[in-house]
Image 1 (cartoon, rainbow, N blue to C red):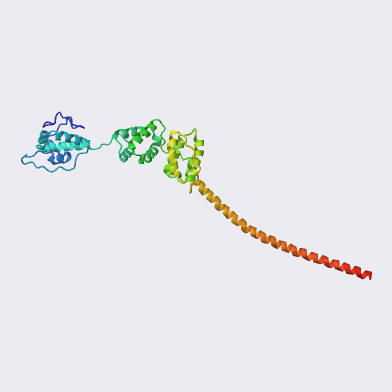
Image 2 (image 1 turned 90 degrees about the vertical axis):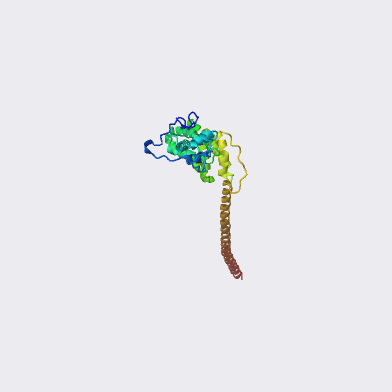
Length: 323
């Protein structure tokens, strides 16, 4: 058992019931670890012990760790602290044990990629194990699901809380890791220049609404075609799409820079181009028409002159005959 009054204390993590080895076990030269323990636990070291160096404490134990719990017990028991101070070997052993008990440990059996996600978002052991169990049942979509979870949790205020919701969706087989990019989604992205996040959210929402998909697509178009911030509009519509609520009537005002506004500008430009060509063509036709008219007049005038000349000749001929 633990000497010097440590036996019987409710030490956390595996500290209780440990049998400390002999100082000469296996011929190993054990260090005098009193300074290490003092630095780790910030012990209230007793004074007046002859020949015992007292190095100043450095660092500190993590709050809530096994080392912190041990520190609190020693602070409350000066007599026990004095016994540890008189035994450097015991101090070294307790320092090592406290460090080992306080160090974070990876849960055995957890997929390395799942553990990497857990470390990235600071997830605890319990929810990490739940996620690992849920993903093991989704072998075909494992990597797509993990990729989607990074995107989903990245903007979450409470990643662990949102992940609990997503784990439940996995268990109910309603979680969509990488939504299908069908022709409707591609058309939305191309027409309204949606960013990747808005495109994925829209695809996810429509994939969960097969019964009303056709009506949803038409109404979403009406919402987006008048907006000059269509990606932001999609993010506003997403909660309603996900919960099955009505989308409401779209804003009929056409915002500058929106899809409808751009289409109207293109029509106006095209009309101006066609109108300019007609005016130039009309001028040419008019000039050609006037030229042809003058030609006809000239030809017509020459004919009338010849006719009058023949009439004069006939009158002269009849006048001579009478004489």
